[in-house]
Length: 432
Ligand code: COA
Image 1 (cartoon, rainbow, N blue to C red):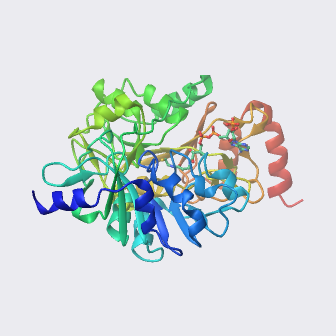
Image 2: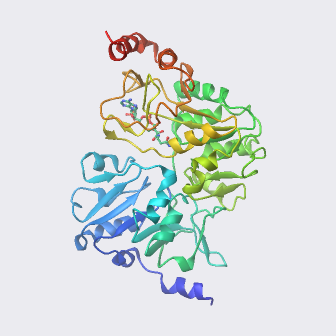
């Protein structure tokens, strides 16, 4: 038996035993999205009565977040780096916190200003050399493993072994908890007529041989559907899902014309179906990297013809984008939006697109507004904005004056709101 095999067998514990290594005052990083551990969060919450001032930091949790429930106050506090369905309410009610930060900078925070005591992550089982893959979630999780004093890993045979800079050695882990639960899946969002139209406009801006970044949801899925006539596309992204796999299988995405990492899809996390996870397993087309690499605007910029596609909740007529809050309510996070918009701006022949439906709340609210809602956070500034797309067309804003931007954005607002928008522009922006 090798030394790593001895270490692995000696340090196999139950989730309940593993969380006994958490002390009061500790900061714990949990794995992100579909790499969120599935046994450790409940075990940690069950131990809360013995703990004080523990902070649990992470982005999206694809699973229950029991330590953000009422009753945990003073024991465990969640610090969110990206709000999601399971954490929004706790943040809104003041039981959890939110820390604004660019995704490209999270690993540096773990190395410096937000030091970690414990990391709780999910890994594939070790191979014959003792290496486990971080699988669907390399993002900040790699840095969490490297920074934390104590690393606890759920070892799950359902976790795909993704290629790239995604491997950690058994020697880097302190305790192992076995799990055979399925990796959480992301259901596809339904694509309606509005998203289809937006997808068509976005696709009209994507040239053959471009390298694309896209997120998840109905608009990215509709856009990918509209790219089926393109040729030789590449991918350099923060994350991707089933839609990219489908375009690879159709031969549309092959990454052969990429000048940086040719013949490779570059990403830091993935979410999708079980079929998608099987496709990722040991697939040499995919190279996963930590997010301080994938999302570094200077790395993104090295891709020629980079097209970054992101979404928003609201855009004002100057081109300021609110993508992470609805008024003061923390809805999500900046994610990789600004990292990719800035990278694409510096890419040779690059462009960035904010694509959003023209209305929200079943057509009652215009998402193109004279001013952002009171308390809203500016996710992307008017200095960074390039194209905005709705189901009514494309507004090209870069290099345009405020007056030109107002005209362009009113023309892609929903027709029911255009007159009202013009009146508001007069009253807000023109000295009477
Ligand atoms: N006022 C009030 N409500 C609004 C609103 C507005 N301006 N805009 C949206 N909403 C409501 C919608 O009606 C919807 O409510 P419903 O679910 O009850 O219908 C809800 O908010 C979500 O809106 P939707 O447009 O469906 O959100 P989405 O799931 O498509 O996500 C973002 C859009 C902007 C939140 C998401 O893309 C994001 O988090 N972006 C920032 C991060 C990022 O860009 N990452 C890079 C790629 S990984």
